[in-house]
Image (cartoon, rainbow, N blue to C red; front, side, top):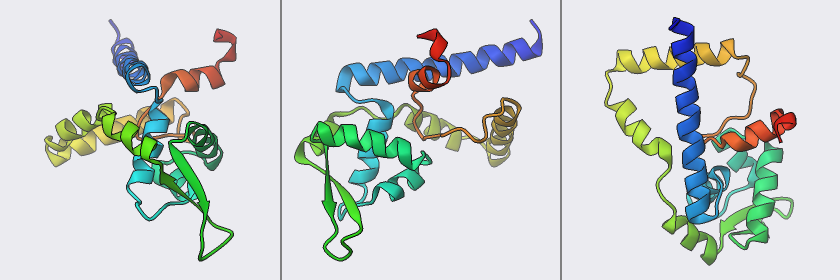
Length: 164
């Protein structure tokens, strides 16, 4: 097998693992990975956080975050409230149902990865990071929305509609 074929196989395995986790997460919690990520981010700010701050913190576009927040609000997991100090500002907070759903959710897939990655020597962490950044550049993926948790099915649906 050629080296590029081995590399593509390894990438497919990573994508598959992420996709399987996302499906398992949705089945067990009723939440998608981005929804869980946004709930976690809102929970980290007990006094409230704006949608734009959430988008910036998790490196998703404000439009994407806004759509996910709309769905979370419809499901009564997040509450939007106009700030009393600045009426132009809308802050997000978890509802009791949102806090309950979040506490019952499993740890994100990448937490195990992070623990294993941080156990590596600094030089090996740097080497892996540089290699992945190079791969992203070679795949023209630098400008794509990215999040700490991936949801592969959504990306494919939006970028490859002929597969539907």
